[in-house]
Image 1 (spheres, rainbow, N blue to C red):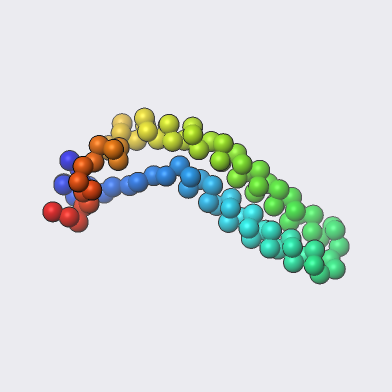
Image 2 (tube, rainbow, N blue to C red):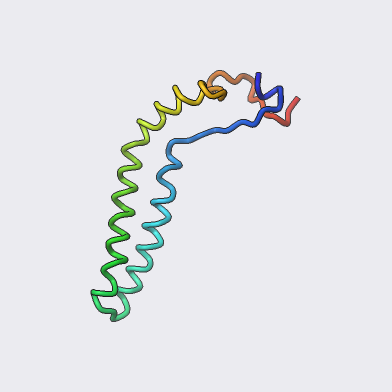
Length: 97
């Protein structure tokens, strides 16, 4: 096996594609909330609201693409040298004997 030969291993989770969007709309939500609490003109808040809406939309698109990316990774990654987790037995790691 590749792990016994000390080859690097990677475990890819398709849900990781959503994390940047969650961070973006959380941060932008805080910013927009603070700007709404302080008397600021709507013209100044508008770009942050649009960025917030874009982050939410991007997060939804990423969530809907999780099944597609997991199927693509399942069939593409073994072709470039990665093993599927279900094929690994005994929980091998590159540091274990």
